[in-house]
Image (tube, rainbow, N blue to C red; front, side):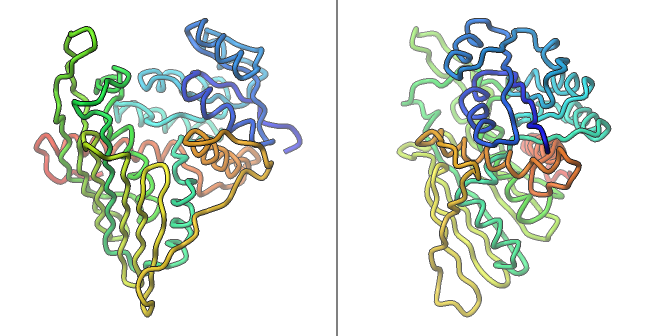
Length: 362
């Protein structure tokens, strides 16, 4: 491309914390403007980011002629309307996950994306984490042979009754809260990359702690899930399980993935923020360590440190791999709105299964 893709971000939470520095780490993009409905928030983010062009009117924002790409990084309830408006205005679209909470609305978003002729992607940047990236590669190269089964187990104590409250919207199913959407969705997407899309789903999705006390003594009713197990029959024939809990006392985002096949075994073990990798093939004397990915953005841009830096790195690598799409070339590793739509259907099927539907076809 002779000119960078001009970017406008709607939403200055995750959008300012992770997306803005990620776009700036990839020279093919130019962060032009940011938008938030709350003037004080957009002003604070603009000052922190050094952005001078701001807006509080997203409807006008998506129609701007000086923007090529709109990144929708707002509360989930706004994704559908904002995404459709951006496509209608002729923009490329990056949308945060989840696409929406209603599968019918996700269908509309996908249809609009595919009819637009524009590039579109959803933020499953976890595919580019330092451990998931090499595992993705060695599975594609045949390290497992015929895949038999895979299981992911995630445990954190964020919602244990002894812990202070997180943001209240996270405890509301209607506002997109819960850890099946918030955490396990990345692994549903990742397992779909490794073993093909799920064809059937059976699940138990539950609220272990339905009421929490606020600091002022009032009570918060909780209807978003804190614990789930999702069993999936994948198109490759593999059986895959994702189990997640946010009420695991004395856990720190513990994470483990095990994958077994005719030719080998792969194990990732650690936390959601950092995992080691071990693998072994037929004829090997057990499992051996596999190096995590040391890939960094080609620009050499300095990234934030710590957990935020890891998220920015993964997002920047996804954006880097997405660049050919704006010239009409395929980017098969980048998650599109179809991938977001698929994960949404799996999660909806998990809730229906948990309510008594048994195995649910996707």
